[in-house]
Length: 291
Image: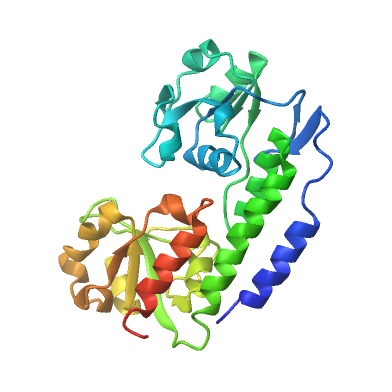
């Protein structure tokens, strides 16, 4: 299955419906709750609690607005010298407020950070969960609109889209390869498999592959027996988790393990502005033995 035509059409729709006219503040954008967040003035002191947002801001050419980030191995190198506000899963609200930001990106309700920051009068924006390439583009455009740099957002989306289309065109006509994207935190517990509604599934399709777990919803845990029965030719996983799959005695006879085709790809590149790099890595993994 190839979806380059669908992608081009989707890209045209995204660009045609891109956010325009937001240079005048106040502006409103929609957050992950489906609520409108009003930004009263252009933010110049931003704290990012998610590496995705830090990367987007850097790629928009607005990195000087970042004053702090949450600790994450996935942060772009451009923010290495910035202060940190604690781990991404548990940022310190008092430290954040002490920095006097005019916007915080990535705070959520479950840890209590978003209500606390909003109660203190700080603008908080968290975008919807990423489920597709188009949702990455939507997030870029939302952040660009919030920063008042809509044109830079459109240019960034266009650049990534062109890279994706160019990469996908290279695999047209190549044989389809069966694959799975598994996340195995340990070698003892069954891994989680990316299902048909995930970005991982979309990238496998764009790469000329077929996801053996495409009928699954979200990313459920799957048994070792199920992996054996579906027998993917290639398995993608986080680089730190490759050994959890290759050393698992229950998976030794899986084709991907037998033929040394368990390939590490950082999840942070899959759902980010670096998605074209992830696509290129998946293409290489699927077709390196099928030139």
